[in-house]
Length: 151
Ligand SMILES: Cc1ncc(COP(=O)(O)O)c(C=O)c1O
Image (cartoon, rainbow, N blue to C red; front, side, top):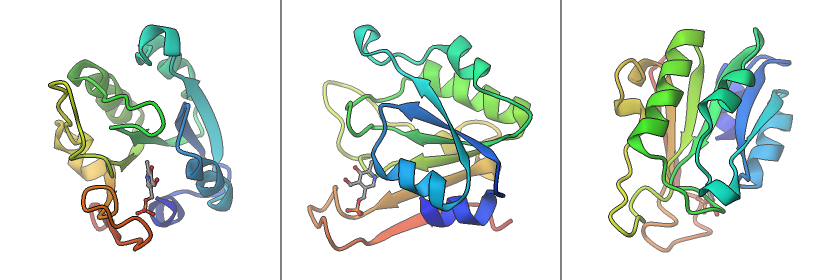
């Protein structure tokens, strides 16, 4: 995550982060000199993404959005509708999505993980981050990857 943020973000750019979030995104945004803009997902509403709250977080300085689904710590898997809201926002405001999909193969109860990069117009604006540790129970190996368009 930090590598892709450093590659794309200029100091002072704003990056939207859904809250609650995996704690490293705090350090990742600070180290890349991004300004985090937090969008709270309401636990009382099953952490549903509120499109209006998300839109309200976008400013002329917003450059990217961090998306972690399936999510740590909530376990939330974003629905097709929620992914569509994020997709529309990214395309409309020319944002880069940084997706952490490390739990991509760990889904339950009929939930389906859909990579954001597979949505129309997103392959060219998504840095897809994943790793071996969760799927293959090798936490500590720190073997991961980023799939992103070369530019
Ligand atoms: C959402 C998320 N991303 C990334 C990581 C980092 O995983 P690792 O360093 O084991 O590859 C973790 C580990 O807990 C995580 O929960």
